[in-house]
Length: 138
Picture: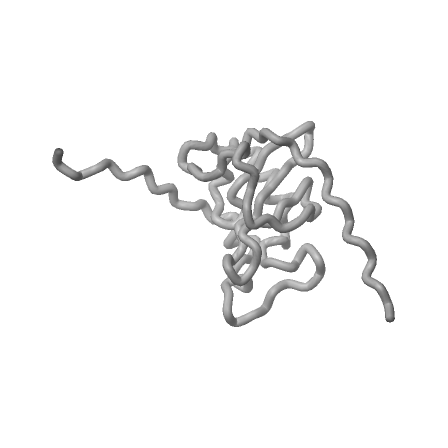
């Protein structure tokens, strides 16, 4: 009976990362750490894991939960990437929008939206919704 090879160990991830809002809906967060780009792709959850982490366009692995120290819950409070950095990140991530493309097996299921995640779609600016003010009267 053939045995599967052991999984590739995940590189040590920094505890604290200065994430930026990329301004896209596909590759939502990016950070430059030690001269390398860390990028989180937002997947079609729950059909796929919530995020996939890439370093310089190479897959590291899937994450359903990100470390709390990364403070990703308030996207509207993160700094936005500069236009040049955004262009660089999107260039690194070319062709990696649909889940599974990093393994040469892009998802083509009719149950999720992976087929829509083209490079053109990934480059479209995301709309940012400002926090809503409370309208309740005391």
